[in-house]
Image 1 (cartoon, rainbow, N blue to C red):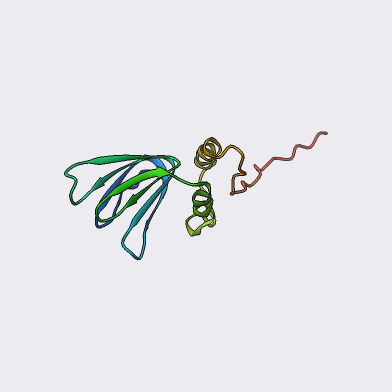
Image 2: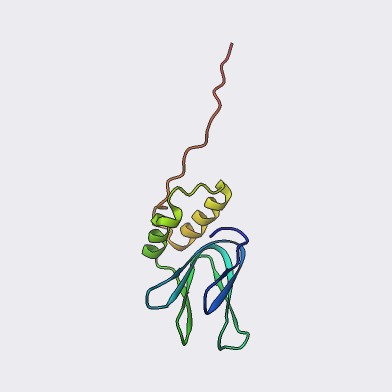
Length: 128
């Protein structure tokens, strides 16, 4: 997901703040929210009253029946997300991809960003 899209599952709502994220519901019912850039506010729909959690770029939120855990995304998880189905043919504006790349570089300074950006189109100039 990218941009101002609010997501819901059976147990949470996720309100975004100019964000790129993925939300997956696993077969065992666990929900996994990976935030690549920006931030997402998560609120459980059952239990915990009105408690909210803020998940920032480079973190993921694991939601089970009894708990919510927020932790840093491991480099392999971030790479898997960027190489996964949600990013196949990803043609978002360069600013969005640049923000994702900045988060990635901050978290993993010695790793190469796994998405290759197409070179900018250039206009040929002919001198007379």
